[in-house]
Image (cartoon, rainbow, N blue to C red; front, side, top):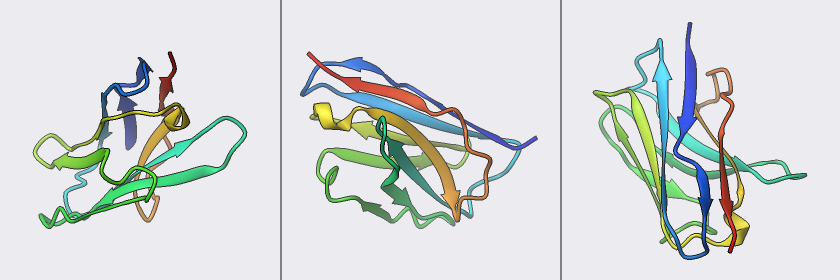
Length: 116
């Protein structure tokens, strides 16, 4: 059964760092473009970053994370990552991953809380 599992979230102080992981189980994702999204309380799910599949690994970021977040993937492990540095309170959200288009069942996400 295909499913994705996000992990690596937690509570961090402003200016801190976290590394999120997105593991895809039951499906080989290497040819697919993948993306991270986030949803803050009471808000819609927003795009954060995406990375091309098929060995290209080209990346694109939302303006509000550009220069602070880095998306990457390890196709051998069927896992994608999001390195988040210089975190701000407004980065607080549940972070999700999916393919582009979003054909995987949505996972439970991983909570990131940035607070002093």
